[in-house]
Image 1 (cartoon, rainbow, N blue to C red):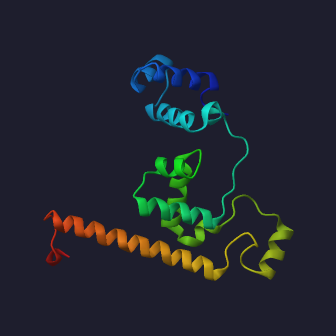
Image 2 (cartoon, rainbow, N blue to C red):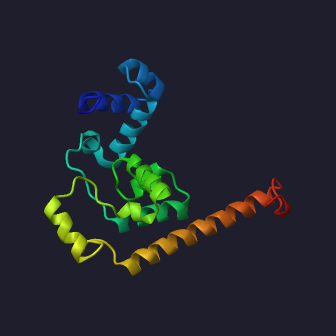
Length: 174
């Protein structure tokens, strides 16, 4: 169950639209975090009333889609929220979780299915092949991983060039 009722979220958005600051709304409605209010406002602007409702069905994303989202975020130096809005993902924390999984477990971590697998299906899948028909082939996955690493490398080169341009660091410091 959501910590706040839909009525409270709608009231917070209404107050914001009438010119109240998030801090004022937080105090008036006894909300623990201004970040919650910011998220409600963003979801309302993106999806209307539907954006404030509790979603009971979990959307499943393929490993390929997750990698594309993370690559887009890196290429555009976008925040989690901007990336979520661009790809119509309701919660920006979903992308943050994907990034954490990528950082901790590599690209393979993005392709692991969530939930408890059925025992008999698990055995059959293990015998047939490593990935399901919905997942990428090994070659496609490696190409995407290579692209992600290339983008990261280019980003780091540009960052290094900017730092050197500002005079904070020279090649000798490296």
